[in-house]
Amino acid sequence: MKFLDEAKIYIRSGDGGNGCVSFRREKFIPLGGPDGGNGGRGGSVIVECVSGLNTLIDFRYQQHFKAKKGQHGMGSNCTGESAKDLVVQLPIGTQIFEEDRETLVADLTRAGQRIVLAQGGQGGLGNQCFKSSTNQSPRQFTPGEEGEERWLWLRMKLMSDAGLLGLPNAGKSTFLAATSRAKPKIADYPFTTLTPQLGVVHVDQREFVLADIPGLIEGASEGVGLGLKFLGHVERAGILLHLIDGTQEDVVTAYKTIRKELKAYSAELYKKPELIALNKCDALLDEEIKEKCAALKKASKKKIWPISAVSGEGVKPVLREMFKVIDEARGES
Image 1 (cartoon, rainbow, N blue to C red):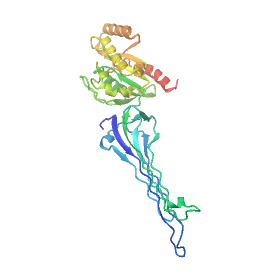
Image 2 (spheres, helix red, strand yellow):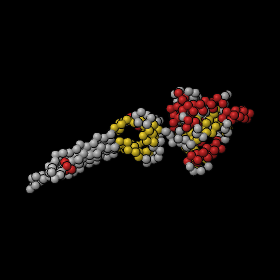
Image 3 (cartoon, rainbow, N blue to C red):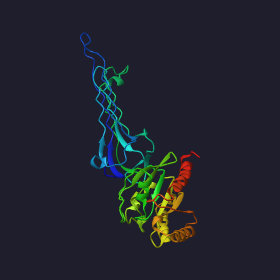
Image 4 (tube, rainbow, N blue to C red):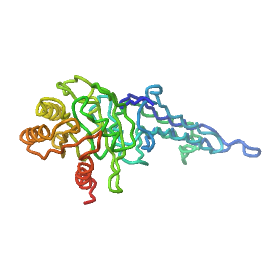
């Protein structure tokens, strides 16, 4: 299934049915009163948040959603049938914006959440509603109200407890594959990951959701590379795991590059709790590990976790430390 995290849609609710002009005509009652019924209500357009969806790809092929009109009123005081509401199903984590792409309409964060985006038009009144002591045979009626229409942008942000960050080829996909049942593409070249990946990580009989996004590069906050497009998918995460390739010469520059791009993208994301892990330590000598960890600690003022996603060395302690922060974010501690 192809991943798509943004789409534009057009919605229109149904018009209400018109009221009816009718008079009672039966045997022995030649001059019966008005009996025109009211029109039915038009269908509303409703979005529903459901589990089991993880992409907006369906909205690339269907962009227009129109609810049906209400039925017109009929004689014998028969009210027209109201149209059924049109329900559009969206993945958990979808945000809905106005056409300007900035005004937030709704944020769908839990399954079962339903929001009316376009209210169906009310049905018009039949002539029986206008009968009075001074007007015994009214021919007045009102047309049904028009439905609402609007263009909207859908933007999906993955619902994850933790997010993986790092330069391309830092070992993020390898880490995700080693700690979960996710099967991301893994290869020894940059930009192997082209779309966000989710995995459920199990540790000590507990689990949390981990998101891996394409690697960031310098200038990502200005649109260079793929990372900026997908940074929104880790905005909901409670903690970030910053992986640094231990086999490169300048690990400090690698760390500072990512931090600079995070700050330029979002102050909120920049301030999120962060663990720093020096990855690929299985390919380093002990002296090299100590030297690079010391340099990173001096630059970041944080504890550095030496790990190897391939061999599993040092991975579990990192996951347990991540769980502490995730519990706080969940409000469980």
